[in-house]
Length: 359
Image (tube, rainbow, N blue to C red; front, side):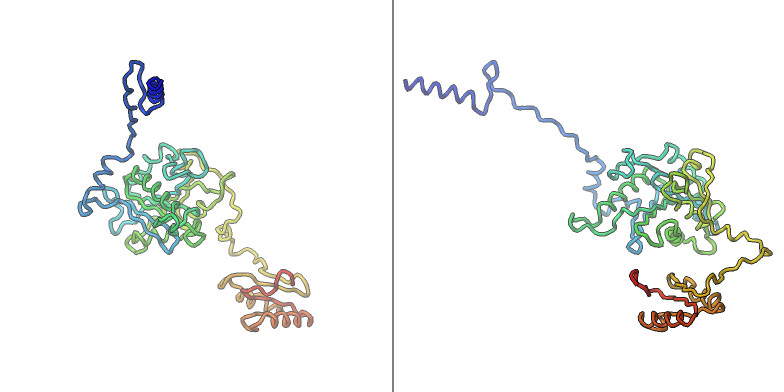
């Protein structure tokens, strides 16, 4: 009985043990390990083990201007074009980035990551390379409010993920072109954001194009962007930017696809006020509409509030109430009431709020 019991246990161990028995009674071979393809290239490995003194310098250099503007300059192996010669006016071909040079490969409105991009049209790289051959300095000017330039301490990064993604994507674009190229990205609502001209001024300073013998040829220069004020466009900042720096403007369709220009009616065009017949009747700038009036000036320093008062309101009998002179809000209110009670119109001019919404 004892021998049969041990035999049963042995059979049980054989069926439940670590080794499987094949149909022929032998032990099954170990499973074949799947080969994982490495994403590390031979070039990357070689670069890792190359001494720093023997490594080639990066073609792109990055810097942050005034904690706001991202500036990157790419130097191709062919060097800069002939337009850098002193005494020649520089022709500039400026472009917006998103929806002008590139689009998302995923079809989403915003890119998923740094690799989610494709050329806006297959003609884009060929056209840009030809501009470089023709002697144009090519720059990219882009509003990028979603980028944070703050250090990401929680993730242990020296820069934010959004900034890293932008740099990786921009570098990939510039490597495919491999021509002298600079990119500027405005991350704040400040002087650098289009249609303001801060990015353009920074470009002029970077390339020493603000000196007499190296100016920009404004007649030959242009800007291409998709924010053109057309029906369906999110804004008109690109068209307005080109107007502010006095260069021609094209939409991507007009420049890359030779589409006919679309007529855009501006809501406000300052140039329209310049074409005034000097002999035409002068329109009254200001006239009093009621016997007793209260005029409240609103505007930043230098807007012309005081000038307007002395030129137009003072001759019309308006009394001036100003907190800079009277010092306190309570005194301003008292003086204004006294003037109105006496039947005199009043002009209130001050930067800080004089009356609360409930007063």
